[in-house]
Image 1 (cartoon, one colour):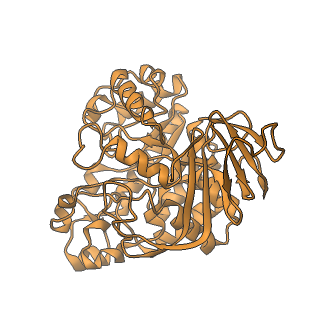
Image 2 (image 1 turned 60 degrees about the vertical axis):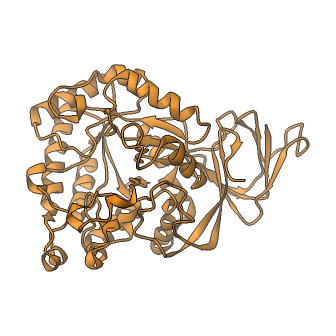
Image 3 (image 1 turned 45 degrees about the vertical axis):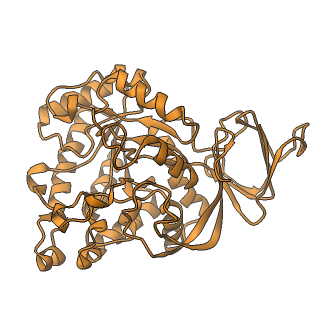
Amino acid sequence: MRIAINGGLLIDPKAGTEKKQNVYINNGVVEAIGKSPAWGNKKATNIDASGLIVSPGFVDLRARMREPGHEHKATLASETRAAAIAGITSLCMPPDCIPAIDTPAIAQMIKHRANGLGGTQVYPIAALTHGLHGSVLTDMKALIDAGCVGVSNALTPLDNSLVMRRALQYATTFDILTLIYPQNASLRGNGVAHEGRVSTRLGLPASPVAAEIVGLARDLALVETTGARAHFCGISSARAVEMIQEARARGLSVTADVAIAHLHLTEDSLLSFDTNCHVEPPFRSEQDRQALISAVADGTITAICTDHQPHEPEAKLTPFSESEPGTSSLEVLLPLALTTGKQTQMPLASTIALLTYGPAQILNIDVGEISVGHRADICIFDLDEQWILNKDTINSAGKNSPFLGDTLTGKVKQVICGGKLKIN
């Protein structure tokens, strides 16, 4: 299938490209940029991208597909389709499905099923310990050989420091990326809201910033001891940002990401008891939010992810503290990232880098760019189109978004995954 994308503003942060150039795709790969190939626009699907941005497809470091194990919430088919329509052409799937991704067979099954759907590429993240129970290490090398891009214990804190050290030593031996959700389980307890004035006012169990700081301090110390390559997921506090900055200044091989919702919402979002605002880690103070935004702007945080967690309606139709945490966030990634970029006066290319080349570089995978000979994963979007997020405009099976009813700016118009058009 031949596709010609004509008249768009091509922005590729990796190549440093930002100018109007046509892109020509043939048989699933980019054949030419700028200069027309011999076939030109003939015998091709022509896309008029005049007035639109042409960027690499987005790379999402954390999105739960709910399959296997929670198909009543969503499936690989529903979520890879929704991701593709949202411009996300590659995504990482955490290991906390049922069963956990702790054997090569499970990893291969997920990749086979997901990639057979012909949409967004799914990259499994392997479980760091068997069943995510925190005691017995998995065969990480075998899991990487089976197609996983890193190892993680997902949202389950690994409290045993000796096991964590051994895991990092194992990972270092084979240069495996360890993705860490920094939390101290004892300090977090059963907290569902940021420890502060709002949790006190509402009488909700609190999760203090100290839970993140103590967990992060322990893990940074072990990273320094072992020389591991580590990525910290879902940073939520100002102090955590400072600690990442300090670690990088000392030469530690660490990176960090932030979930898109944490750049826009704070503890005040809980005042209406909207269970769609029950997330883990919790939305924190305005000071913390501003620190996260600054960290995105100055390069301390090099990736923005969806942290997509679709739920069936019943999961949120309970008292706040009993509801299941997580938001459905695929559709809001682009518009909310663009809003953050405008608020900080970041160059558009820098904002796009946080969704493309930044996460791809963390994973060390060959995506997040538009270059000749590479798989054609491309997003075409309108910077200025406004639209309303509602249950009809959410393509995910999960409609649990705290942004329902909001008017968003920035709309995906067409997506190409592996040379195939995903929006009719």
